[in-house]
Image (cartoon, rainbow, N blue to C red; front, top):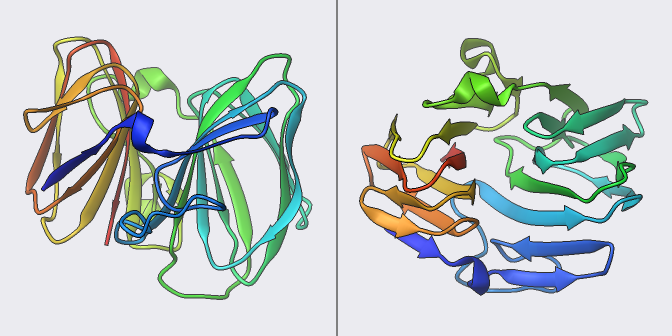
Length: 232
């Protein structure tokens, strides 16, 4: 099954400093048909104005992956971690038993990012945070694992869930195939470029919910960037 969720159909909240689109029910946006997709609980498409951001706030029992599309985000948390994650790179926070963090765009331009929440396999545990640079050129033409519940094997940032976050960049006319377990749930978004997924066309920033497929072939109709989560 491949379910295209057009960008225009997503939940929306514009706070001035934050223009957010919600692929799943979040905050004041509620859609009983879009609560989660397997372990994938949140996928927010955020534009954060220059010199603004999220003040300190708490989380627990959630794996939070931030994929920065343009600009940069600066993180600070109650464990003393601080770091700047720039376009194309990724940060992961395992909220565990509880953590307070702030995320600010201290740049002089807007920052765009995906924030993805994945339900962990177990609750509790010590919270943690990590960040890595993932040069876009390294994933040209094929999938690269950015975060994984099997991080050592995948060479990725660790998350505490049976899930992977993968990304690829494709030139127009190129394609990439992902081997999938049909019992699992995949969710794919192309922040840039029109694509076809197993022959079904999608526009930039559409959500694509997938299950029951053994192979997922993405063809780029334009130069495209892809981000996908594969989860139970």
